[in-house]
Length: 539
Image (cartoon, rainbow, N blue to C red; front, side, top):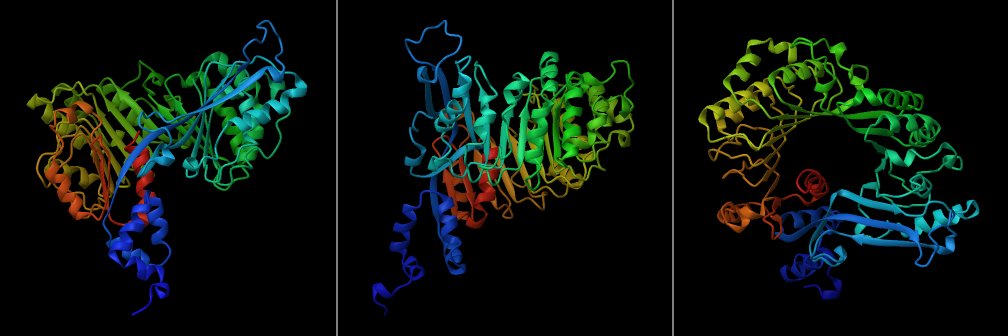
């Protein structure tokens, strides 16, 4: 028998007492995952080990407030730097969380994002102190906290303030090893053109993994005019972005007011193509763009989005009636690069609606040729009366009908509200979308223990507020929980026997006091699971 000093770490870990003590020191599954990666035998040992952790999800916000010091004359046109105060305050939006580093369990930032809330109350500084002002701003922004080391998104939000452009100068001095996406509001590009003259190359040098730039905007005619004036700034930023592998520009939340911003979008597209930057457009609610006098099958060319259809990756629309649904779907069928689709229904409340749709040519609105479409979300108004048996029948028929329009490439399906998923309905969904790997639902009743069985390729299930009695064994990640605290207060939803059953089936589990339970086995897949949970569960 070996003396203790001769035992390898793996041999020590095979001792149950030692293993328990060491695992108790590893609060995060990231640490457990890193341990399992040290050797194949360690991985097998971690796979067999039962590990349970608590979880806490929080909003990571840092408020940067810049203002004249107390006693500074209010009538100063220019404020000296010595009279300016820089305040930085971390806000985690959880009454039990003063410091996430001290939490004894799994800690997640929502959407894996650091949000910087910028409020600058100083109208103007001396030109000679501009560089020092930027340096103090950089020092105030804290990206180096250990709890932020794994963040992948850096988002800037603007409070009521002056000189938004200074954030762009500060970017060059910031550092973070894992940030992949930076979100900037359009106001950072809206100051006078001369304010940007000293911007130079190397803006993103402090972010080695960065390759996605997202520019958010609320389009008004005045804003568009100002943005167009600063095309040189966009040219510089997109040129810098183009130096990165898989360089991508994201334009989110283009909506029914798109006609106001079309020149701006075309300007961005022209510059992006100049530097070979991939452009992704996120579009919402195009029914306002359709000619109100057109027929049900409005020509695709009449859709204002047609010129940018190949850049639209994400699309969502609210439907008030069946005419809008048919017109929008007819327009969408030419969006060959569409990857994510959200359909929100406020109608389908009478038999007449579905009858009108079924009487028309289904092939004219089919999306089955959109081979890039991977994610589909179907939302039904929470005010829909699911106690009405006739409406329940209509809902299920409509869901089958919508599924029949989808391509076989869909891998992620999300249902929000609904009359209940039955095995028969699931069979219909799987027939048209046979490659569903992730199924998510919110307030969707499940009827029958076998209602998920038809999804043959299902690997991940996320259920909010309601979930089925039986989860197929092929499911590798199971996340169930409750967003309605009143349900928990009345104890009407939590099925403790079900929780116990899955705690025994899976070797790894995470939970919190709000009714969240996450189950899985393979620690090597934890980073993939964590990303899915951060993006779609804790939102």
